[in-house]
Image 1: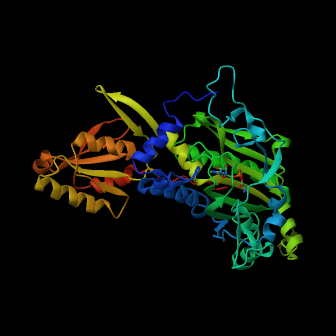
Image 2: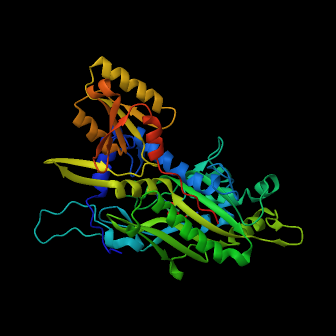
Length: 452
Ligand code: GAP
């Protein structure tokens, strides 16, 4: 496995393409943005939706032991007392007395003094750091009209707790029995001290989390199962295997709730970094909520009664979308003309096919192209474009990662064939217009299923 990233992508190039092609815009752009906050444009929404849909398909639709949940973002604040987040969800932080910036005490290597370099020779501005102190990452808010301690609440920093506090509701209303899982996709919020690297670390982001409740003796086996199942999911959706690795946490890295965690790491241009964490949370959460709420949270079978252990694959939808974009990003020169292309797996590409009349103002071509476009639309995300020179339209589709372009030209009128252009190989074949819908549908790869 490579130690360092050697591809053509950089976070800056991917962010520039994302902005130019309506994947992701800086948030509140006309007001100068808001630190590490982003808005998704049309293609970004489609891409992230596809990532989430593939996650849900693999975990819920393709299995019969995982059910869905969509819990509230603002929960009773006692949840965060019980979970340990109020006391322990913090990073050590230092302030600089010179430049007034705040840094993570455990990441000072990457800290940069915010003061402008001095014009006076020999005088180097350097940070004058305070002692480290703990900084809680939860965003606070107030529920109701009164701004007082008793109405203080928090935006959830993970979706997982909404699952634990619904354990009883789910087990008493759904036909589930350990081993079973509850899956949730939704926004989480963390007041990160050092957000950055585009979608990698934001203060508002989306998580895809699944809590898998198992008999205690099976926890290790399910932990290993989910580490591999989640690794495979990324590979099946196109991430190059050599840029993915599993790294087990050292004892001093473990979160307050975890007895074992493995990170799936991806080789981003910034180096190997966490893409998803798979944790063995033991019975920590169910026991803590049972104790704080006074409600028994256990599995009661015919002859048994126990507190299940929890194996948790916790992924980030934005971070996964970033990894897919980085992995897919490529630049090449074709016949002396540079092109940028996103070689996204067809299942997550925002648009699957583009239909292009060779000449945009030839009514016979436009008519055939519109008819093909209408025929494809019920089956997949497809775009019609008659706007510019054909080369320019191909480049645009390459940059948004559309796997196939179907072009209607004058030969179509003579013999009823169209060209299908492959985004990656650039091969063009002529295929019968009749049957083109089926052909494109057949080329879309089947989904992969992680059955036990
Ligand atoms: N419930 C466990 C949990 O939340 P985590 O490792 O803190 O674990 C899981 O978060 C995943 O959520 C991460 O692997 C990452 O993909 C995503 N994530 C966490 N913090 C993030 C942030 N500030 N910005 C974007 N994604 C983030």
